[in-house]
Amino acid sequence: MTERTLYYWAREYVAGIKEGEDYGDLPRVITINIVNFDHIKLEQFHTAFRLREDVHREYVLTDVMEIHFLNMVKFRKKESKERKRQYVGEVAYVFRRIFDS
Image 1: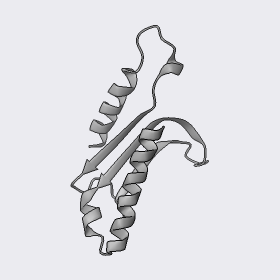
Image 2: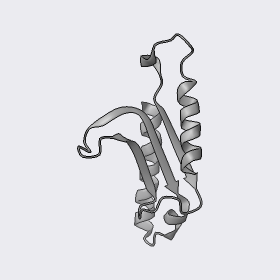
Image 3: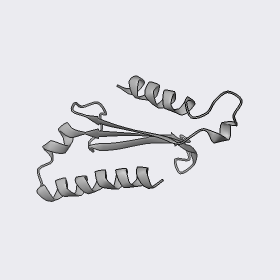
C-alpha cells in the first residue's frame, strides 16, 4: 500500500508541469487513503506523513507532499461515542484543510 500510494502521489506531482516549465511551479499534492485494513502499525486511526528532517522534526523540507491514511477498522473499534464524534471532526478538519489550501 505504501509503494502504491507513493507511485500515485509521484504521478500526480510530475503531471503538474510540462517539459521546460519551472520546477517552482510543481503543485502541492495531498493523498488521502481511506483503508479498511490495518496498514499503519500505530494506534491512531488518522496518520499523516510529510517530509521532515530526522533530528530537527520541526524543520519541514517542503510542504508539497502530504500523505494521509484513515483506518476505518481502528475508527470502528473506538468505544466511546464522544471519541468517534471527535474523529469525525478530525476527518472534516483534514478535508477543510486540503480544500481551503
